[in-house]
Length: 306
Length: 281
Image (cartoon, rainbow over all chains, first blue to last red; front, top):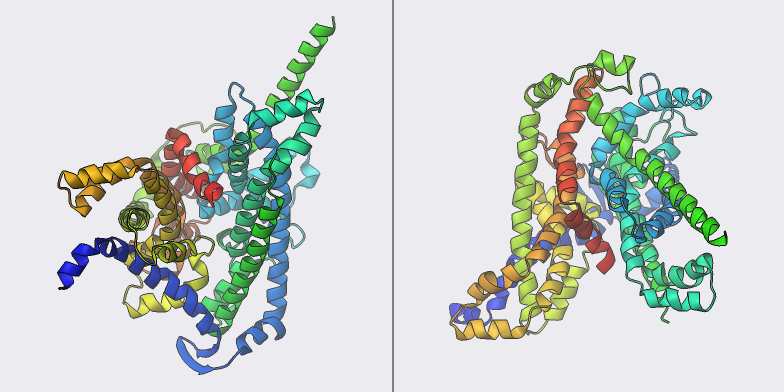
């Protein structure tokens, strides 16, 4: 009976392994994270149902609320600077690369090179290069006659976050360049020619023809960047430790969540708070989900046809 | 006269663009270049002469890192975990995508959307339930915890990409194979799989790179030193040899060279693979 049924509906056997794998190890953890956040926890043991208490703790009770808003602010700055860099420099380079010239293929390959490095390697590499006494970066500044700019980039609250953001941009920028370029190449040459025949100059063609057509790609990459930055953790953890040194000046939601969930080894081993950490994870999810939703809607509305 | 000045102007502009691109490319590549040449120097030479080429190209430090700092073990672990995860996700996602794209059944669209829902969400947000699940299944501190997490989180994008590929194959092929007496499974792996090989390559690259580089899940799931993957092993190594910069740079080079070489050898496939998700999404 059973065998006969499976013979007739063999697609079920094809679908099942993947479905089980995905449901058990991805859908189940993601959905039960919400449940976790609604209970009080004693270590790894679940206690009583406590409604939205964990969320209240994160948003209103010190020191959690201070850390949360601080981390959220840093994520926003992180995203803001990365967004500006990729939509100016990144887009500019992508536009240049769409022109077929000798050697551009190689140059483009080089821009993408850091993207293949692990975040851990990127973090450690720049940690050594930016070392205040022995690092190559400050030494290079001295060689270039910019010695007075040399400083402990990662050790000061004023420069640490910005430095981490730039290190991340160094690894990341190749990706938007490539996607922008692919988007630009999808635009039919006819539009450009038609505009030129009508007497538009190079900038006008870009501003009124190319840019609107490539807007959906820019929007998509912006959303991906946002999602990525609001989930990231490694770079700050490797370079600045789990509490975002110095003085939480590089703390982001990823590291805040990690400390809360798995204990803070840097400040004497405060044990993990599963309920509160789950609330943080849900808040992170909500931020990403809401922003992506409106982002995608804006992209749909901005799509143009000629 | 007019003609000549515009030609000249174009040359100047082209030259300026080349110069700008080369300067920027230098910023992106030089730190990696510096990492590689520094790995050949002694710690003393690194501090005295940070930018010059090494006086002697010595592989001694690499050997030390490989043996003494257990990089051979970490490396093998990374290869094992990435390889098994890739095989698992390729098997599961190609079978599922095949079922979803070639068979008509109730709910097929629902299952497709069910898989797709995972594309925008990172599994990291479910790390606490996942951690407890792994503990209850006695999988903590095993490679299986990583393999299952990676393969499960790779499913949405892989199913999405492969469904697209399967849909482009004409139905006639399937019918004629069936007339020749092929079973469903035979049609799948004799006829369909070879036809979606580019899709399988894309799925491999999309998943392989982040898994090889992943640090987050090994950090939480793996405690025993002999089970650690390269990115996690690196952090131990950095704590141990903080002052021995020669060792540190050699370790970083060993950890990053496989992907760098692979990328330079097949940059076209890498680029199309890694941007595929973003463009189609």
